Length: 212
Image (cartoon, rainbow, N blue to C red; front, side):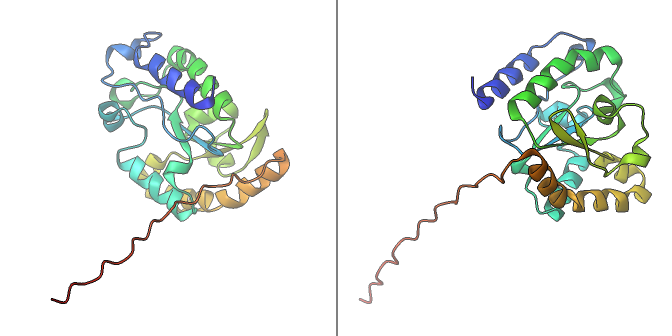
């Protein structure tokens, strides 16, 4: 089964999942989105109100800010994979409970295995805890470290800057370092930058003007 097929299968399973109580209040599950061969995978905490309505990750105010952060780092949203540690919205946007994290962990692990990203960027302390437990995000944000077969960079959640303006400079600085950190990760993992297909631009011959 290809990576694309695996991700599609996971999305179908998540849509009907009843492994924890979150399914009782969801409108739409949010499996995640992005290319199956993404070099960078962003993992947030859980869907919010707008994500629950649309079934897509990071589409509210924090999603708009994430798109701006990616653009400033020279990245496009469509080139990265974005998801959350839980695939259904926790009521009132509360933190995911331990059993909810456990129920969704199998889906997340399968996504990571299928995509095989060079870098995982965790957004917020909940997703950071899965890969870098026992530390404070305020002390390790922006620092890349090897975890298993890939690299992990803990970062503040984009929503944090919307509620605490003082965090915005740190978030901007962390994202600005992403391109260089990606080069470091590629080198350490022996990977090459993927060759992007050039879009074919068809130029039509201008029609001869009829002068009469």
